[in-house]
Length: 128
Image (tube, rainbow, N blue to C red):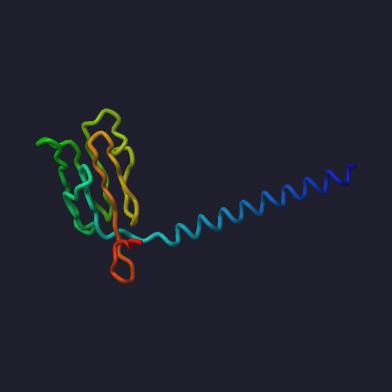
């Protein structure tokens, strides 16, 4: 009985170690495959209101109902929401985004800021 427990415990440890190695390999592959973004697309209520290059430092006020509700800053190749007049300010706490596919969302104002990039073919996305 004692030998069987030792063998089972060893097998459990090998399984856990194998799963950890697979997880680490997948994480490294995902980080290696990330692509720097090229453009910031700002949508309000589903409509594109601005396309801004990540390479140009600037601040962009996002207006909702005639008032500035959010303020987007592009600096050092990244975009971040610096101001929001919504109660939770989750979009401000999201921090800077710089890789293609990253996004900042402000649900109360229906604002989505998405980083887009280009692949080798110059396409932003492929529809299927």
